[in-house]
Structure formats: structure tokens, C-alpha cells
Length: 191
Image (tube, rainbow, N blue to C red):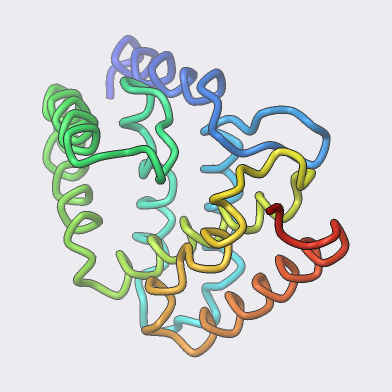
């Protein structure tokens, strides 16, 4: 990739440092999309031994690029995002990716297609970790930042994505235990 094109990608990616998510950090600031993506990559690195048959390099690539579309649209919380939002984000991302120089203009759209289809083990690992990272982050945030709907969502979110893996089911159960302890320590669910 030519240096000028490389810098254009870096400038686009920098938006993810500025675009905030619905989540808050334990220090009381909004989490950025880049914060989320970085920790998702760390999660993928740390679970690689749990999936020896998977191409974890591909999982890491998925984690790195999974929210690049939010450089165009910003983050829309999962409980607010609709199909039109998803189509718009995907179209903008694919248009951008196809304008990249070879081989990225073919590799990235193919990777996005695989991620969307959720048919490969690699795509399922990435998606499960993506959901789990968000739940972990919510547990780390002050419970005062939670919306009432998030008390139930916190336990449901990602549960369907971990079913293919005994390890990820165990991880989700441990996260849920932290969620329940946090809610109990705060005096229970709001009325």
C-alpha cells in the first residue's frame, strides 16, 4: 500500500478513537469504538488455545476491522440499531473497502461477507467475543450508567452466540455471575 493510501486508512480509523459507544469505562468516561475493538483483539489472542483448529489470525483480523463501518455512521447501541442502520453501515464500509488498493479491495469485502454469514468457526468466535466484550464492559461500568432495559439485556446478550463452544458458554456463565453480583450489590433491579 502506498504511503498516501496508508495514511488515508489511518485517518479513517482514527475516527474510531473519537466515536464513543453507549458503554462507559470503570473510570467514568464513555468507551470509544477503538477501546472496544482493542480489547476484543486481546480477547481473541487470549482464547486462541481454546480453539486450536481455528484460524485465529483470521479471527484477529475480523476483530480488528469489525467496527470500521462505525467510522462512517458512529456507534448505534444494539437495542436501537435497526436493519436500515445495518444496511447503511455495511454499504458504506463495502464501498470504502472496494476502493482500497489490491489485495485489500478483495480481502476485506470477503472477510466482511464471512463475518456477516456467521457460518465459519472463525466468524462465530469473533461474534461471540464481540458480544461478550460489551457485557464485560457493562459490568465494569458504574451501574448508574445502565438503562433499565440493560438489566435483562446484560444476561441475554451474547447467550445465543456462545452455544457452539463449551469454553465460551463457561465464560458467559462467569460473566453472568458477575452481572448478578453487581445487580445484587446495587440493591437489585430498578422498579
